[in-house]
Length: 400
Image (cartoon, rainbow, N blue to C red; front, top):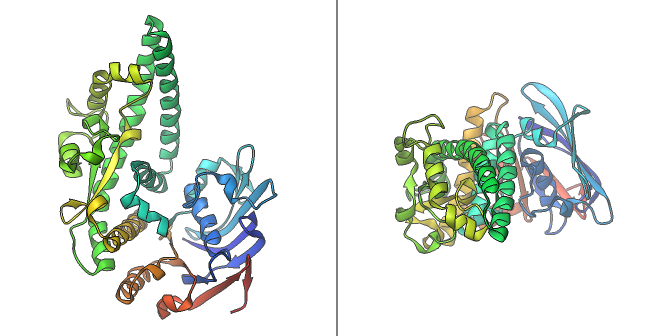
């Protein structure tokens, strides 16, 4: 898979721009603030329906305009595709493939990319919500139907929380208890599938993460991913002050106990654990008016040298871990996909690396079908990644 052409209209600082891309490495160069990252942000949005920089899509629309348009021509599984999304300041966004209208949430079926940017350091050092979002975006890229499962879970969670708040305000009535049990069933059904899918994804990321970390850092610091599950007693609000091994199970242990074997497993299945956790927290949930257990409360703990990276890893180690995690994601996607490699996007990465790490990263990415790189300084990027260079100035493509 690769992008052959990108067109933007009223997106960020671009009134209109046309950008051709080649197979292999493509370097986008320009001073800070000229619009380099805006180009790759647009492509990232096509595959994840979110920005790596902002939480609201309206921020991506050019000032004074009601809508922005991202249009990309792709080579996909031997076919040429035209994908398009219109981001509206008010109302729903709209998407098309080859001029036929599709559901916006189906766009990731047609374009797969993995983007790494300085903001991804928050995966290691930030809140659990960022790590959950990382897992879920990768799940959807690998299995697009899970977008519907995640959306349905969020809807059920909102409905259940509304009922809990109502019960807290008025006192729980018999009719409300029956309704709550109905929402419990749906929450457990959808949430168990999400927990199982995440657990299997974390398991599969283990080996490529170790290989990618050593390729980038030049050392083996034993990177590991551990799932912290609320249905097994982990508490997002308190886990920062608790030793990780008190609240986290290695993925291999979880699989062995039945947590990732699906909703029809035996006594230790995900659904059984989920139901038991809800029953145990019923009074606390009614007191607080919110759902306190489920995949929306889970976390993913990153370990280096048998210590949690958050709080113990140096800046360089944290940077290497986050980068390795994205490279491992790209490796999983290329193994799964019948349409070829995902497009690998490196946004302002090389400026943060020393010379040896730059060389190792360049060697690690050259095997991908297409790599898009942004940099403020041409000399920061190894020469073998500069064959096709695009110069950006003030929202326009200019000659070198």
